[in-house]
Every structure is written in C-alpha cells, then in structure tokens.
Length: 363
Image (spheres, rainbow, N blue to C red):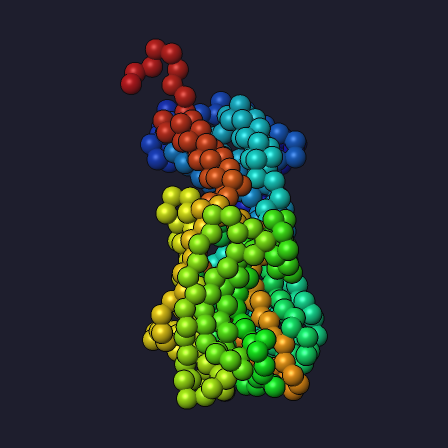
C-alpha cells in the first residue's frame, strides 16, 4: 500500500492534538505516521464508518461451508498497533490449523422424503431396486420369495454418547402371501457398516424392529445387538394393533409411528422401542427394552426390513423419519470456540484503555 492509498469507504478519524477521540480515547498515532498492513491481510472498516479505539483491535472471521473452511480474513481496525496485527495474523493461522476441514454434522436429522433438497433417498440402499422416493414417501417394495433383509442407511454424527430418539411413520399397504418367515420393518443403528450385515464385530449394529405379519403369531417388538452381543440384554414384547386379523398385527393402509428412544446411565445404553398411532401420541401395547454395557458406536443409521413370502408383493411406505439427540460438541467445534475466545480476549486487552499506557502515566 502506497502512502495516501486508502481502501474504499476508509475514513480516518480526525482528532485535534490533545483532544480525546471517539469513546474518550486519546490519539494513538503520531502526526504524519501511516498505518502498516501485513502483506496478504485484508483491511476493513465498519459499515457505519471507522471503528473507535475502544473496540477490538482485530477480529478473525472464518467462512464456513459444509465442505470445510473456505477462508480466513483478519480485519484491521484504525489505530491498531502493527504488533497487534502480527499477533492477529499468527492466531488466525493457528485457528485454521486447529479447525481444519469441517465434516457436516447430520444430527438432528429429519427427512420427509418430499424429494426436494436433502429430503430424498438414503445414501446406501441394499437392494436399490427395493427402495424409491415417490409421492412424498420412502417406498419399500419386496417380491422375493427367499427370506432376505432390505436396508437403507446413511451416516450420521453426534449420536454416540448422547440421549436420542429415532422414529418414523409407516403404512403397510400390501403383505403378499405371508408365511411363517414373517415380515418385519424397523431400524438399524450404530452400524459399523452401511449394509447392517451384523455378521461379526466389524459389522455389528443394533436392530430394533416390529414383526407386523406372520402366518403364525404376528405382532412383536424386539431390540437386538447383531454381530456383537457381549454386554447386551433384551426383552421382546407382543404388540398387536389388529387382533381381529389372524396373520396381521396392523390395519392395512393405516399409518403408525415406530419410535426408539435411547439414554445412557454411565457407560450403559438403555433403549426402548414402542408402536404408536400416526400422531405419535398414543402408544399401542407396551415397549420392548434392551441394555448394553459394551456400547456400539458405529455411524450408520436407517431402515432394516426383512421378509420371505410365498408370492405377491410386500409394500410399505415410510415417512417423516427423524433422529434427534442432545449433541456432544466435536473437537473442531471446541477449537473454534477456544480460538475465537482467545482472539477476542487479546483484542480487548489491547484496546480496553484506548492505547497502551506509557511508563509514569497516571492511572
């Protein structure tokens, strides 16, 4: 910057010798002195005009997006000593290093499957042909006569260690030719892999589901730890929302709510699974329960259904899926807060008195 050059809208504060400037602070610049700006650092003033010397000497701003930290700007206010600018630049670099790329936090998560924006299909579908977002719902359609699970999942964060509620509305429109294999729908959660394989510790997950159809006795809620059962105890319960129909525990074309709640007592996870009406206000029957002292911490959540039919088609529409939780701040969030606090504290310390006191000056 050449002497006399000024950024657009820069207006220096005019002060008479010996008179107090804005906020009561005395002039800090020597007559004829020009301000020094470190190379590569943006200089700015407030929209309302120059900032007075009682305000922070500098501020660091991070431009954030879901893909990460885009830029850092260190803003220099009038009458800022060069040493303060050097410290601001140094701290801004530390801020950038501490924050790093920010991964998008998904929780709290909600999806109405309207097909707009993020309200669409989950990231992983197994098998893909069995899942589709259509007509404002997440449609599950199954025609396989072999007993096979179907999964749709996405990765979420902030869930481990915090109380949570996971729920969805569902409407069964067709059950095909039901047999003793039964038909279930429900949740996979804290999965180590996106397909909810549950074949071993490396693919472990929790299964919380509802058996809504069976040629024998339909209507049961259960919570299981698949792939790693150590430390887990569970209690399944019978729930029948349609006792007048022998092989069906729901009324076709009627909407219900399946809700799973989790909380922690120390390091033990406690879960309850219940069936409710469409509004989610009236529970049908009682809840299945489970506890786990060796908690799973995978990041895959979603739907896990299973059916094996003699023919025809199983059709279930899911809507208004959500997971809410008391989120735990991530290390990056703590770094942001800590750096911002440090920057603010240093700036206030330098400017609280308008300018540093000279030796021998009165208090």
